[in-house]
Each structure stands twice: as C-alpha cells, then as structure tokens.
Image (cartoon, rainbow, N blue to C red; front, side, top):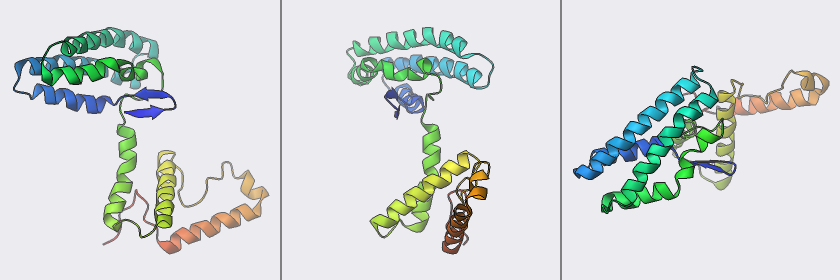
Length: 202
C-alpha cells in the first residue's frame, strides 16, 4: 500500500500475489476463492491498461470498474463468513478496508500499484550493496539526498550534475549562481560519485 496525501491505496500487485497463494492452496474452497478473485483482477487490469494506453476515457474506465468492484465485494463477504480459517482472516481484512482497494478508481492520477516507487528504490538498494553502506549518519544523509536528486532528475530527464536552471535566465542574471553550479559539478566529479543509473567500473 502507499499514501498519496490522505488518500490510501492498497497495492494490487501485492494482492495479485496473495490471490495466487490462495490458488496454490490444497484446500478446494480456498483455491476456488483464489481463482474467483484473480479473474476479477485480470478483468480490472485489462480495462486499466486500455485507459493508460488512451483507448478509453477516465469515465469509461470507472464505469467498467464498478461491476468488478461489486463482484470483489461479494467475494470477500463470502469468504469472511465462510467459516474457513484460511479465508476468514484474509477476506475480513480486505472487506473491512475495501475502500482502500479502489482509491485509484475514484481519484484520477493515483496508481493501483506501488511498482513505480519500488523501481525508484532499486538503484539505491543496489548502490548500498556495492558500497557496503556508509560510515556515519552524515554520510547516510548525504547519500540519501544525492540519490533522491539523481532519481528525480532521471525521471524528469534532467542533468543530475548541476541544478536545473529552467530557461537559463536566472543564471544569466546572477553570475554567482552559475559559479555555484560549476563548483557543485566539480565537487561531484572530483568525488567520482556513482549515480544510480551508472554502474561502477571494476
């Protein structure tokens, strides 16, 4: 799950894995519930992909998602009162917090999964493994900030070496700003900073 301001959205990629675990269960009742939920998951994301590809409009996607939402609600309610210990707790948790499953269908711009956030964190995890972490709290603060700047610049197609000058007018009006930017670029070059989208040389 992840937060966007005060709007909570549970990650459907994680839910898909949970549904698959139900399918893999030797218990026939649990297996059937897994298949039923996975069927709704496939239908939902078929419409979501069409929306993201621009093939259907936002309102159309919402209309397609409405009956799927109702079917999932009915399935979770069935599992909640099934008497099967393997289903009751799982379905109760989702049913009682079911509004968090559908925030992305109510608020345009919210993603149904946190895959983007996990991909953004992956370079930092790899960097930590390669460098064996940092030696001080200050080093950790420096690294987390520089990696954040680097990843943000990558997503925005900006150069991570110097601050983004916009249209350049600020630097032309303020030579000190340009000098400061050059000093920062030199600082990073001298330290041979390994940015997340570059691999260290052997």
